[in-house]
Length: 196
Image 1 (cartoon, helix red, strand yellow):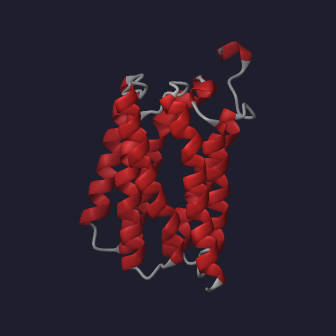
Image 2 (cartoon, rainbow, N blue to C red):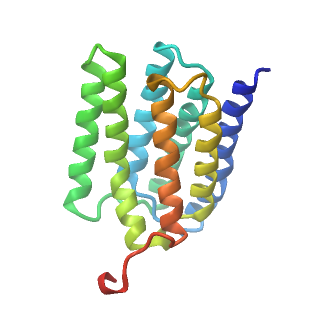
């Protein structure tokens, strides 16, 4: 097995390992996942993986397939357990709408690289409600899921065949997003006392 494949599989493994404590915390009603973010991520990362494969990427897509599956599981289980946050403010719906627009533009554009940019922007817009929620209430998220996601993203970077945009952009973005979330839930990035 080639080294890129090993890193691709390791990135997926860490997504799985991070999901377990998150699902346990959902079951115990200790976290409040933002449903709009998790649903948006589920569909978007699945489509993102498809686009990367269509453009020639290989093992770097493993993290996206794993993300798509586990994001959907988290969204559904959060609804079942009654702990999911549907909205905390009108900007949540604005970001979700912008994410959907990015998703639509990604699908209708015939240029894979431009479409990938819109896919990443859509992912970010889907994720902003979770960042805002976690920034306001870091305890509403599980630290281990974001630690595992950041490690997964790091391994995903090593699964890239070459640092060409169509293959590197999404894994780099995921690593930055997940690392930012980790810093927020660890309270390294936090609200100043004046704003609390």
